[in-house]
Image 1 (cartoon, rainbow over the protein chains, first blue to last red):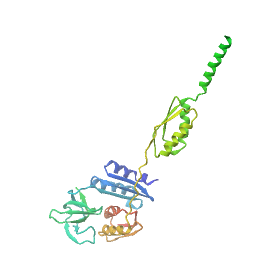
Image 2: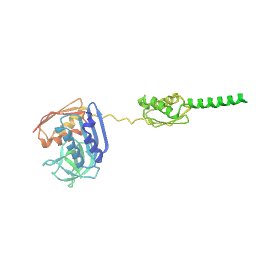
Image 3: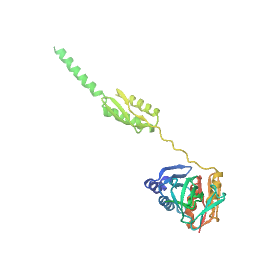
Image 4: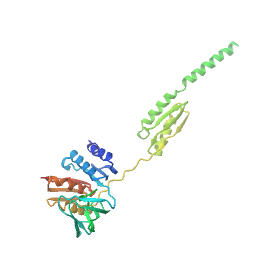
Length: 138
Length: 161
């Protein structure tokens, strides 16, 4: 069975749920799905389908790189498990911490540095880089 | 007079024979179709034949395939001329998948696993190998982060608790 067949349900869901810049490519027995989901719920749905098709993500045959499209000025919720989210001087965990955003706090996206680090600003005026995995655009 | 009459009959007969020998449009069409289908690059071309004139239409990926279709059609028995309306549409070349170099992956993996101290991630030739253990509730978040790093693949050997 080809990888595109194995992950057909996922590819179909990405197509029908409005993922933009969708790219589905196969290279050296790994399937790469890239794109921008319209919202966090869509991204979550795709990851749930991935988990159904490859329980516990064991097969090592898919890289699902779907981010959530969000432009500067978009509000994002801090979705850490329970702790504060570090705001850093630069994009990297080796950078000094310049502030904190509380769990469930709403912050404003300034720019996307890359897929991992976003420049954000809190309502209190603190500005810096936060790890994108813990930010859900609203 | 009788001689002329006989001659006329013979003339009419020979005309009928000649027309009978002329290949039918449908035969020419199937002959061309067979020739085109024998080659992968010309197999998608449509053929119409009217009064011995073959019209080719459809899309091919390069000029060479278009010319070949024209030649194959012209070679068919009974074809008077070929109207080659086949268009050339080059295939869209897919950009290769961009894999980040190991140095970038090592830095990215460090950030992504910072909150998961029981997870060990090694990077080698674009492949991220995960060992150690992880809570089931954390696995999806960890994998979501790692999948954004543009690795070649992720080998998940984690023990899930």
